[in-house]
Amino acid sequence: MSDATTAEVQTLIDEIRPYLQGDGGDCELIDCDREDGTIQLRFVGACGGCPSSTATLKMGIENFLREKLPWVKEVVQVF
Image 1 (cartoon, one colour):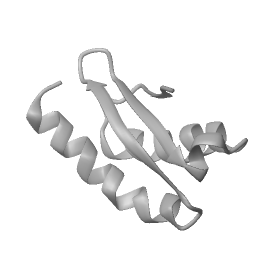
Image 2 (tube, helix red, strand yellow):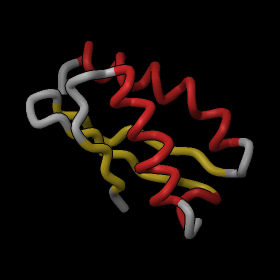
Image 3 (cartoon, rainbow, N blue to C red):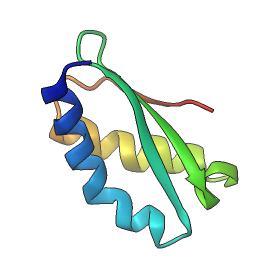
Image 4 (tube, rainbow, N blue to C red):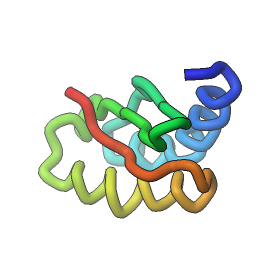
């Protein structure tokens, strides 16, 4: 992952971080691959064990990142 791509993705994650933290959780950027269009995140805190984390990931975070970064095809959760 390039430094520019990482910084770009991290900046956008920082925009949504307060919403996760408001529920006692957070997420960490693990990896992003501009070539295959994937971003890997790890949920921590309350988000790590939340039954709604998949919905948050796909309908919230993934949709937001795909809107802002046209190269993003999928955001996946790693454990």
